[in-house]
View 1: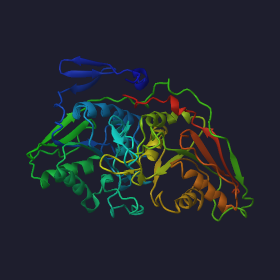
View 2: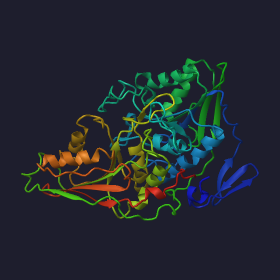
View 3: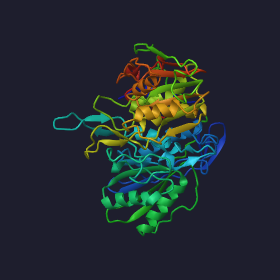
View 4: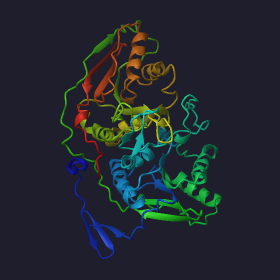
Length: 492
């Protein structure tokens, strides 16, 4: 068993006093009558479980930042607290069968059109409480149990928002489909009816805002003629809805209330695992002279700083990868706000669209393609803690043959990022190739070192000064020793 002192947060205590039919929480804050929840859902049923994620239109008070559409610290705390309730009280500690989340680029919010990352972040902690076992494929391979479960958040083939790159046929992943906010081509109904028609008992969890959630509940109810009393309006950030379909085909609507009262502070992790560690990678610094821009590529940005970090720990072994980080990665991601303080000071956070597909381990059903969630989920807590806008790069594919060149052009040319400092969470194997492309555009033949496969700590800094002079170095690091991170996800 893991050391519980390492698994639990040092959150300020919440004191609950039972008082007749009322619960008084914290400093005399009344929560009203608490009714008992139904028992956990039967494992023999097909259980479609809907977790309503907050957005700018429907949320608990204070759960979403109005200017960035990110979760607030309180909203993140709520998602962390709801996760064990969902696992224990709704699933009865059974393993989940599949998790689906909103495709973030299908729901752009605020005047700046920031993607809806709240749905994905809302279900992340729950995903860490489940387990998937994969292999590297082939006869005689060793099964690897992962301390996580993949989240499906990708686009159905042919159904992508305007300006978003079409999924590549070279990376087919029909099982990776997420939830489309606008239900383009009736993708959500196709997903739901496909699950019901497959008639495989289990627990299918959906994380999306109220609008697509209510539409999915209502349409499934109508299509299957269940005759359920589907809620017509948004009611509470703590409610979880489930349509439980018994083997004969009859359905029941079951509603759970987690009754959580989240703190308004960013979650505080146990300090023991995070002993400051020196940078372990061999240091380098590579310059390229832009002079008066005669030596720089056309349209190079000026006065720009980009900090590249890789995804948090995703591989318990060299053969494990399912598009999401494992326990050690969650510890690292939630602690980024602390370890990066005083080292970087970005005004914006960028990452790749998690709807893109990555190739990884083989599941029991022989699937080896997954939604690529690790990058965005690594950087999202840092954006939440600092109330920074979060943008997803979705106009090209990471798997494009010229992906490194497209990335270099996106971040370092055409002036969009001039006079800015940004944090970018990106695929580590691509970052050296991006740097190599950028140097080549200056005519430099300097060799860029690789990024070690077990190096989750480095920060690569790319700087362009006022006349286009370029430097690339790895003088910074997060300072977290991966070997000291717990093997079990933090508990809340």
